[in-house]
Image (tube, rainbow, N blue to C red; front, side):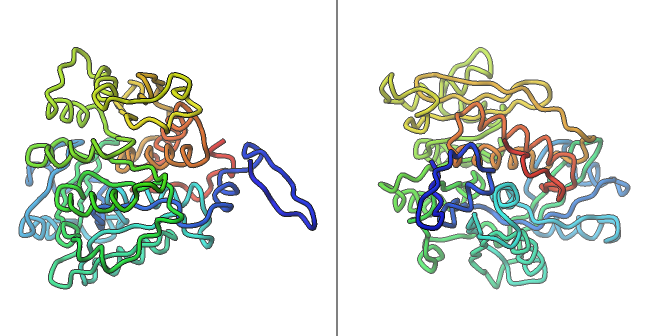
Length: 384
């Protein structure tokens, strides 16, 4: 129930009578805290220079390049008029989309974001792009390292990502000590898997500080290739998180790291849910109390296959992909935007199926734009 003061009395409004943005306006801010690798995205919609072949980049794949190789790639990029520059990075994308969904451009900042940034022109551009999206970006500046960049090459709606982390790969406990975490207002802490690969100690310290404050810890698995060298760190964070997001290939990588045997990939979120030893009373395992459990797993499958959310004592819901109203242009940030929609539902006390439906709806809108962005003409009741 939302309480609004009206003269000498109080008017009681059901949350369902308010829009998402009106509900968020009644929260203390910030509401969501995120940690990730901030990147400046350079997006190409035509591979006229055959960069995919020259740099052995896989369609719909992602990889990290050494700094020297990335500089060569930049030298081979077409002229600036044929590329788009956007703020990027998994968690940073989610925060920008969430702010646009639930906040106002010049209103309170819903999200606060932490990550490493270089002191260079690319860093200046990225910082301005994120702040113009009204996200409270609290970067740790590393003057001797370049700002992380990602080149995205789009072909027929699919994309290939090549990134160099630079300063984005550095965020230390010392950096954490220099900032104040707004733990008294934050309701969700969102951590991307890429961040965990280099700053597990920071992620664990943040989780430790959040204990006892009724804050939801959410983790995104992000990429299959990072399991090769960092499966132990990722598995440890899965154990600390209440909600884990990942696509089917990432969930397979997690299951393999944990030696889980499965006949069908759709079994994986159920196996993971069971593995966490969810201990909730039967009376509290309904969708209305779903956040009481720790084994909440959200798995997307792409194409025509449904997304799945599992919670409580093996309870689940599925949502088929929502067909975009406009042609698919760029799938970059589809997963990041699904998380934004899901968190919007969570924070407005929706059931898990509705959260997942909102996530799918947001993703279907984002893929019709270049970069992880939403149209400026979204209707006020887009999430209802």
